[in-house]
Amino acid sequence: MKPRLVDFSQFQESSITPKLTLPIKSKPFKKINTIHTLHTPKKILQDNTISILFNLVFIIIFIIGIYLLYLRHKKKDENKIKYNKKIENLYNTINKY
Image: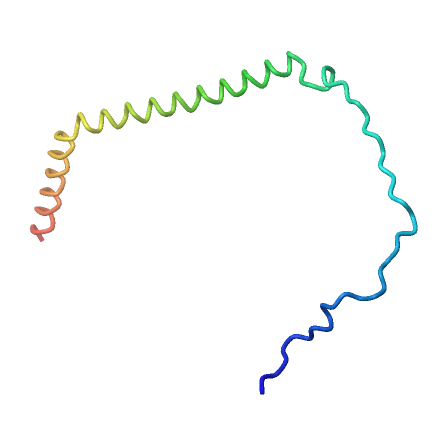
């Protein structure tokens, strides 16, 4: 015999229904004049200039990053020769002692 894990009497609808004592009244919406509440042209101009300057800074950083990657690729052979010389010098100083 399985135990009853759920008491189904809790889910049955009760015969007593709550009654509202006060009726709900809806308040009429106030009409907002949207022309005066929107941003003024000066405010819009300030927002646009800030976003344009912000984007320009990121574009400049991006261009500098691409230029540095280009220089790294261009000097790859020179850097490899310098690295090999440093490794040889290190190897020679270690084997000296």
